[in-house]
Image (cartoon, rainbow, N blue to C red; front, side, top):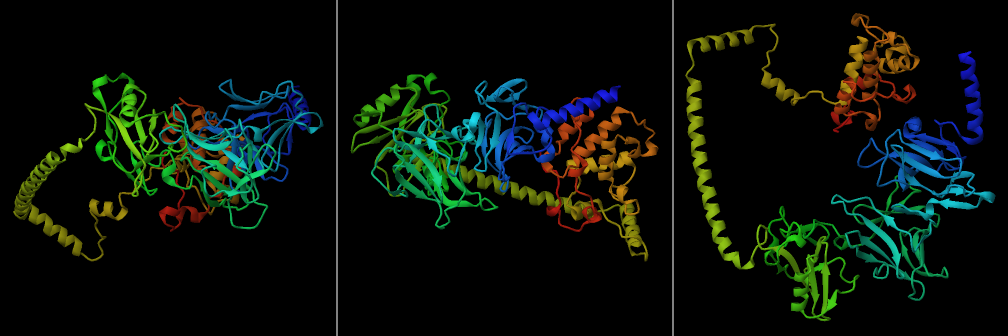
Length: 625
């Protein structure tokens, strides 16, 4: 009776699946999905997390690992040939491998995390009957007569694809930088600009100011832009080309480009028709020092590669104004100091001045405003600029039209007074003299100690001399094995010891099975022990894996746990292997142990994989965690 109920359910499930995809899928669907489809990353692990391909299998929709944590996942559209992510729904909030993607019967699409909805298309009850991933990389929800109800091209993440229209109101946002700063691309007031997303965003590039653009028409307002052929084109409201920026010198008009705003502040262009996803030499902005953070805050960027701390702020390692909370400092504890000559800032030329006044008034207003951290003054036009967040400064050997000042702490900071230079010079000479004398004394003491140590070694007891003579006698006896000291072994093996997760898993599996991982004398099925263990685990035949000497019951839960852990540790994909911390938690049964991936994903272990003479760099280890 139970078997008949199960069989009936499976028939119903399969029928439902082919009609509406109601059952959880474990294989990739090509073209379209129907409402009722749902699944988590763990359901699609055999297909690298993908569950929907475009008709020509150019792009795939599914779960892919986050850059910051390989145990967390993004719902993303991926270019399958280059593995490049071109769109993601949850870039800022990755999910676990058990969190569900759901295409509801009412037409709404959601992504859940711990039972909460973290992303949605908000298309419930709008007549959606299908989801389609197009060969252009556009994910669309279709209504009656294939009308597009929702599309990913209208909701870009950090990238733009060829022929994707980017218009006013849309925004590209990068992943956070190492300082947790993000960047954005927007069309505002007839211009397209890049912004550093400080508390008050600061622009650092605009298409109007980029002299690499080719002028095609009158200098009108930009309304939309898109990647077409081998160029980036900018249009007015009438869809007339105003400007274009050439991405490649090649004449092929069938390029498939993706423009990605990276966490470094650059827009980089990748050719998706090239299997390696090669980059265009064009990048935005062209000058590295024109980005907000080519160096640390307050450091000066020279020539795109050199970072120097302003001399008035101290050494490079502790470069800073010494102000922890500017609006909590007392009025007398802060001051403005001249940052030096030839300095500029990435936002100058793109922002309006805070006021038009003289230098003294500009300084006074900055001191009176606790949010003002740095100021620049353009004497020719009496332009005063205040900034409440500070990125990197720009240095130039040819000078600058601006005078720059930095707000610093009078106490507890790293600020240097330029007038103290002479006193510092004398102090430095005294320090050098002390260091030299100390070094000389230590050197003399070292020589004396070594002399007496050597002298004591030479005075040996009769017993030590006798033992040394016996060692020489043994060494000179013919046929005796060569004797090595522990130090010799350390040097010869470079202190080698196995500590990677892969080796631990293989050792654990060999202990459980009581045999090595490869025996050529065994049958073809059993010669490769890891692959054989995978198959027996899947078939529930744990008894065939166990070493009979262990005297363990087949139904002992600890046996199944240990075998699962071992099989996880020896996964070919290093990103699937758990860390040793995770292994310990699973062994202690603090953390659950999910079933390992199918044995079909295991590459056979050949004899030369184990006994190869290949260099260590060629051996695939689990890597640091």
